Amino acid sequence: MRPKTATQRVVIAVKIQNPQMITIISVRRTIHFREERSCGHNTAECTMRPKTATQRVVIAVKIQNPQMITIISVRRTIHFREERSCGHNTAECTMRPKTATQRVVIAVKIQNPQMITIISVRRTIHFREERSCGHNTAECTMRPKTATQRVVIAVKIQNPQMITIISVRRTIHFREERSCGHNTAECTMRPKTATQRVVIAVKIQNPQMITIISVRRTIHFREERSCGHNTAECTMRPKTATQRVVIAVKIQNPQMITIISVRRTIHFREERSCGHNTAECTMRPKTVM
Image (cartoon, rainbow, N blue to C red):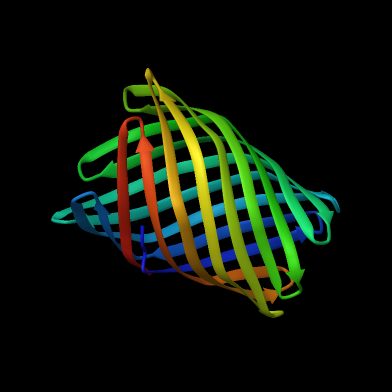
């Protein structure tokens, strides 16, 4: 998948209620991008234009003690309209997740001034989504019961101007029930272990501007999917993903932090092996603005 350039306008308002509670109150974003997909001998040039995505996010962060920070709950409502044009086919789709309530508990252990480790994540999500695409409308209820995710993130602070996330290892086990129209499938998806090497260089330009300048990651994982009576053991091996990310963060005052723009360029190649089928795919989104 090779997006040439992705430009995303993001405005995030962060309200600091008290020293023990930080709340992200709203997110509004507009994305425009063009994608070319080539998989095997088939190439389709697609234009996907989410017009505007307005997302109301409330995240309560409780600071228990200097060694433990816990995100206790997330509630969000999203409404957006998307027009998709792929080849000669155009469908104007309205996707309206009504409300997504997500309970997230993240324990963050600070080992020493040079190492911060996120040790575990547990979340429960329940949401209802209505999708209307063309003349077809399906009201779907998707209920992941519980997702327990063990995440170990080592963060090395090199100097006051450079912070590098050096490695991520996670194991996820969850069960999901999907009900869409009259069809219900109870699915168990068990990624065994996902090891992700992430190097993120963060350059602090001045007290009012922080820029993330580059991301390089290599991921190797094995996933077993069981949905109904069908089980497929899949090996997905993105070889290397190099992502150039420039994020400008403007600090307006001690109570407000705004991410004002995101621009990224990604180039990677992925080999997928699922059951007896192997396809080496190159997906090339052209521009994201």
